[in-house]
Amino acid sequence: MRNIAICGHQIKDLVSNPSYISTLEMNGISVSCGLIHTDDLKFDRQAPENRFNVLVKIIAFSCNYRDKSLIFKMSTKAPDQSFYVVGSDFVGEVVDMGSEVTQFHIGDRVIGNNNYPDSGVKGIRPGIPSNNASKEYQVFHQIKLIKVPSQMPDEVAAAFSIGAQTAYSMVRKLSLTEGMNILVTSAKSNTSLFTINALKKHKVNIYATTTSMRFADTLQEMGVKKLIHIDPNSPQIMADTTVNQNLPEPGFDCIVDPFFDIHLEKGIYYLVDQGRYITCGLYDQYSDLINERFEFCTVNANKILTIMMLNNLQLMGNCLGKTEDLQNAIQDYNSGNFNVLVDSVFTGNQVADFFERTYNAKDRLGKVVYRYD
Image (cartoon, rainbow, N blue to C red; front, side, top):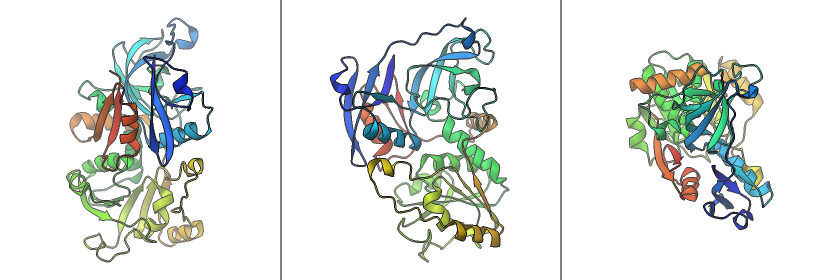
């Protein structure tokens, strides 16, 4: 059984062909990674504990921003002779299942269902089905999976569920109406790319912020009305008067933000009365692991709550989404109303190249996928 793993620095001395190890640098940290072969997984379809379980063979997977902290934790804290199997999103094929599985058939392609805050079945944890999505064979309760249609390519399916489920959950909570002005921060982040694509069918005006105009044409083709170039070191998101030209007056009806610890205190000023701010994550997830100084977190609760009170604002948090959000995203993909941007696909011995492209490439736009050959 194959696994894509982050490895302790002595693992290379313990593995042999066809396993292999390579290295790359991330944020100044040396990261060992590779393909590790382990014993095959045994699955007994008649076992009582497997009644509702499904055995899935992983076809392809991708990593998200959340994986980066797990990578650094392994690289800096774990024993040198250990390894950690990575991956958040995946697509796989059903190869066996328990006696009482009703939702799938052998041969179905499936992705993870990250239903949160409740899985839908007592005793089954909500949220992401696996933190080790590259493990080639895995057993899941049927409630943690959802079938994908034949017209969705493996590369798209392997990059789909977390971003789509999160984006559709946030858009649902905003209760949008036609003509609203929506600001999406960090346009190049995968969460924001999913959100921009999810917003298009709602006939709203999409604005987005970025620290680089490299992808301005692509983002505008995706539906962004105006891309706003910002200085991350500025105390305000849009301090320059030339930047503020052609922006909506008196401000934005909603702001969607994947990194509240960068944008919240700066961005909340740009909401109109009764505006809504929704966030699904934070940037500073690993600086303590690599002794990297994080200077953007300037959230002042007193100031923010005062602004919210005076302007009748709503501040919402979002973690993943419901099954219905994922189903709606799949339906919109089928009908051509939702697109997933895949940057590149790697396979075979391109493990270090996969991580390099995922986390280091400044010209990346969209999800990076690894596919088993």
